[in-house]
Length: 174
Ligand SMILES: [Zn+2]
Ligand SMILES: [Zn+2]
Image (cartoon, rainbow, N blue to C red; front, side, top):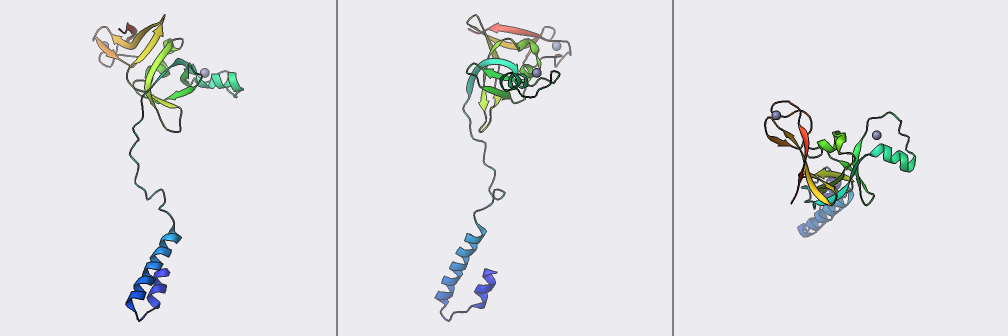
């Protein structure tokens, strides 16, 4: 519309016309406003600092029922997450490193040390690397082991090679 307007108005002085074109362009930019979110290219993922959190695995829903009376039925699918020693709760991003924490109830009573990344504006923790546990002041690395294949894994359940059950190992860290 603004461009059409410009076309109709003719100035004898070409310099003036150029000026008018500039004003139209400015007006057009002002009217259209800043570029919408869809126009901006996707930002590269910011590099996040690795954190170390100590705590234990709890059912987050049950914790919210106990603390705030959340309407959680007695029978429910547990949603496991980390309750840190400082009282903060973290949901765990599902990866090979967190799979055991989300599924193996043998880990529920232990004090764990998780290293990973917490994503901006969330309490979502991505566990990176191996899970450690603390017992009597000593630190142990937790993993699963298949005696038949001599394979170490972070994932419980059948061995990825022979499909036989693996067992949980606590190996003391020097
Ligand atoms: Zn539960
Ligand atoms: Zn095996």
